Length: 170
Image (cartoon, rainbow, N blue to C red; front, side, top):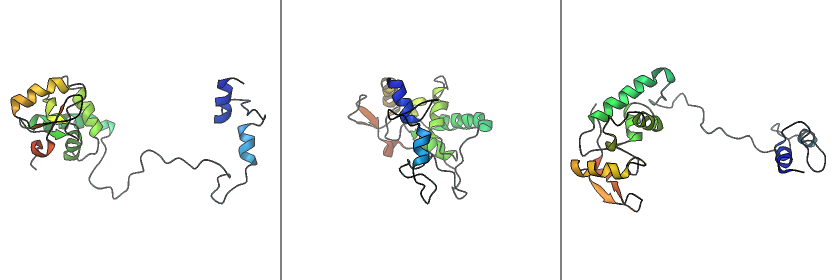
C-alpha cells in the first residue's frame, strides 16, 4: 500500500479508501457503539473553533469589518502621526485606543503605509522594533532620545516600553 493510500485510509478520504484490514472508515465508524453525547465510542472529540463566538457582553471592542477597513486604516494613520518623538505605542495599544482588538490589522496598515508614517514609534508588546527593521529603527530611537535597553535578541536592544509608552489623551 502506498503512502498516499495509507494517509487516505487514516483520514477516511477518497472512494475505496480502506485500511489494510479491508474495512472502509465509514464502516468502522458505524460499527462503533453510540455514546450518550451522540458521538461514537472512540471518536475524536469535536474540535473547538480557534476563536470563541463573541459574547454579547464582550465590551466596547469590535473587530473592524471590511466595510470600515479604510476608516480603520485612516484612524491608525492619524493616531501614529500623533505619537510624539521619543515615545512609543504597541500594536495592541493602538488597536485598543481605536476600540478594537485587531493588533494584527494595525500591523497590516503599518506595513502598507509605504514608510510615510513614523513606523519606528510602533513596537511589539515586548518593546522590540518591527521585525526586519531593527537596524533601521535604532538611529531613529537614538535621534529622538527613545529609551532603549540591552536585550538578548538579534537586534541586541529593545525599547523600554514602560518609560517610552505614550497614551493618547481623550
